[in-house]
Amino acid sequence: MTDNYNILIGKLDEFIRKYYKNQLIRGGIYSVSALLLFFITVALLEYVGHFGISARSVMFYSYLLVNLVIIVYYFIIPLLKLNKIGKIISHEQAADIIGRHFSDVKDKLINTLQLKKLEDDNTSNTTLIRASIDQKIFQLKPVPFSLAIDLKKNRKYIKYAAIPLLFIVFVLFAAPSIITDSTNRLIHHGTFYEKEAPFQFQLLNNNMQAVQQEDFLLKVKLTGNEIPENVFVDVDGTQYQLLKDNTVNFHYNFKNLQKDV
Image 1 (cartoon, rainbow, N blue to C red):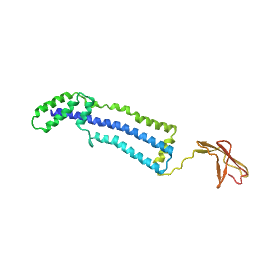
Image 2: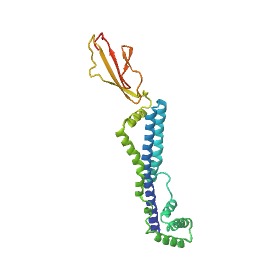
Image 3: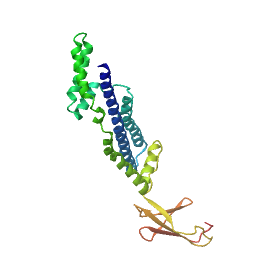
Image 4: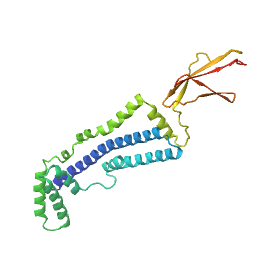
């Protein structure tokens, strides 16, 4: 009977290992999904908000803290329990989980564990208890406890990690600055970053050299989401307003230049 009971306990231990292996796989997928989603959220918030040092610092350390909690809860703890470090489920709890999958063996399995405990607590009348245990173990032998957990079912959770990953890859190809610029500012959260102007200057002159005593026509085109009404050029501390040709094109004619430019 002892050998049979040890085989039964071995099968329960095998199930418990697979139970935590399943938790580890699923937890790993959950961890990756949560980390990617949180990264996207933080990166988009920073890209749109262009926050200051204090706000970026809070976001940066919050991201690290949340990541740490997620990794510990969904990955580190199941990994420790898989290696029997810390409190793990008992044989009775494992029997209850197995019983949910093999309903016809639940009572027999739990009753066997209870009878074994009863035998250990009694010094007399153990013959009948052992016979009953042997009978139930014989009935439980063909049951593959480990099949109560199907590791392949975790495949359906991969999409939760794949979707945010594909989104990040798409953004990196379509508009990489959304990810790269905001991530750089978050990493260097203690550095002040001047907000980028919503427009850019484009010089239309092919040659920026001028001849002394001759006029020089400066031509400028503006691009961007917001075009200013007035444009100025600064020359030795003096500002000159450019004349507007249309919404985006401006010019200024430097007359009778006194020195080479």
